[in-house]
Image (cartoon, rainbow, N blue to C red):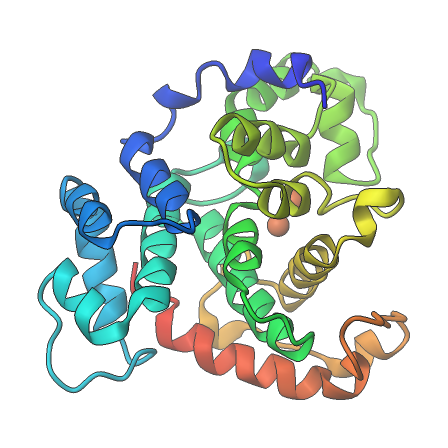
Amino acid sequence: MDFENENKYIKYVDNLVPRPDIALEVMTMAHDTHCSIPEMAQKIEMDLNLTANMLRLANSAYFGHMREITSIKDIIVRLGLETVKLIAITGASAGLMKSPQQAYNLEPGSLWHHSHATAILSSVIAKYARIADDGPIYTASLMHDIGKIVLNRPLQLALSNNKKTGKKFRSLVELEEYFLGTNHARIGMALLVKWGLPENIYLPVGFHHTQEGEETKHINVKIVSLSNFLVESIGIRSLMPDDYVFNIEEFVDQNLIIPEIPNFQENMETIIDEFFIKFNKTADLI
Ligand SMILES: [Fe+2]
Ligand SMILES: [Fe+2]
């Protein structure tokens, strides 16, 4: 894949987010099959914010523990390897995702809210698709809109210089492509490739707004696109959890038949209920 155009924009990414180095290293470590937990714990503890985020998550109702968890080592011992990876990935991406994105009309925190919701819904759907390891889908969902962080500034500039064009766009991707020659999905993919994350994570990011082509047949791409679409439809952009609504009738005509997820249409209500229970337990933690 050629990312010549994208690399122009991602060159400056290190200036956009606080301490991306540790968050990224932790995320990469968590996806490595030979991940050393003591090493990862040491890395996490170098970042106070990440440590605090992880402790809040570990102590949340989501994991339902009675005795307070007070250290990263404690999380590992009490919640196990898979859970600590999940919490590390969540905590790390919150750090990357919390800045405001004015060009996209996103308030501080709303990109994080939307990304976190997409990740939770994806992991519920992955269970129905009988995917044993939902880690890559979860991470891809958390990162699917990370390109917006990179394109926020260039898009803001382009929009203010082009106020008079009066051109109408059918989608955000179309607008981004018109002004910048690329879109946030492709930028996100270029970034994750640069960071060394595997294909089953960068493909769903790069193709979450694409309808056709070989890549869209990948099950991770399908699930991340679907979750993003449903989360958008519920309205998880910047509102508070209580205000979200899901109108099942709206989706009956949408032809959401995915062979890899048996009876998706029939199970949709249960899936969304499960999602809300999990989401409401964690939405305001970080
Ligand atoms: Fe997107
Ligand atoms: Fe999205």
